[in-house]
Length: 137
Image (cartoon, rainbow, N blue to C red):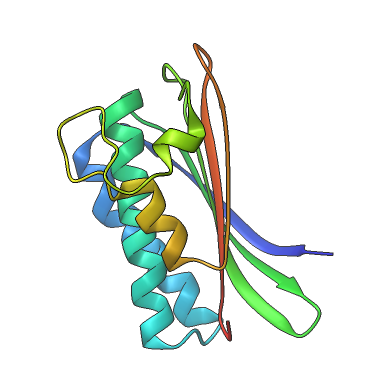
């Protein structure tokens, strides 16, 4: 069972909100003594997911949590938007797929950088992505 020890919610509405968000993610990763390599992976995934939220849904809510499971501590990030949603999640999770003529590495790239990745999307109602990076994972 995963237990939340601490959480903070941040509204992401414009590009200027990204740096404070990334700084807060790093702060919590350091707080649980996450190594620099895992910090970098987490912050990279967080950056990609928060930018997707801005690009495709014009923003949303980001939740940063310090969580524990047994002897493991981690950072869980949740990204919730009210955008148009993703009609085909399997397709969106394929490397190279993009609706915006980008490299198409966003969602699958973010998934490879974290220990746990979950996405739920309802067309017309938005998308929620939840990731966990364990300090010692």
